[in-house]
Length: 117
Image (cartoon, rainbow, N blue to C red; front, side):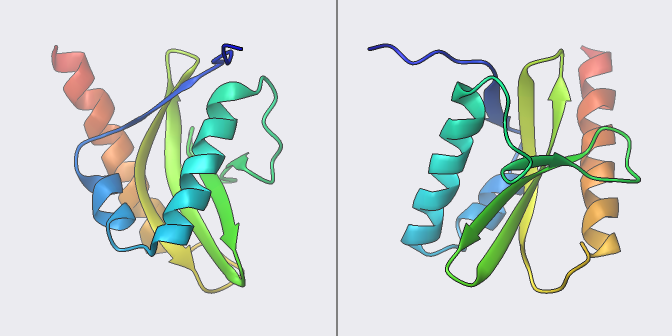
């Protein structure tokens, strides 16, 4: 049976890969599973994908593995395209402000580059 795809997750430049390459294989599997879920269901539960309050269009892909929490920043482009841009292991309740600012810079870079094409 063919899987329906509601959105496509793509990775912008090297930012995501730098984070992903540092992870252990079981975490990578959980992230891959979560991304497949985001692509294949129409309404993604906030447990897996949620808008970051106080930002313009930034979302976080949410992954838990054992007692560890991981976040991957992303945003939408033209409705259904999710651009994964960077990630980190969350160690506190609040998302670190420097991580949010970095993701906002990368998002701006993406759209500035796209506008030049």
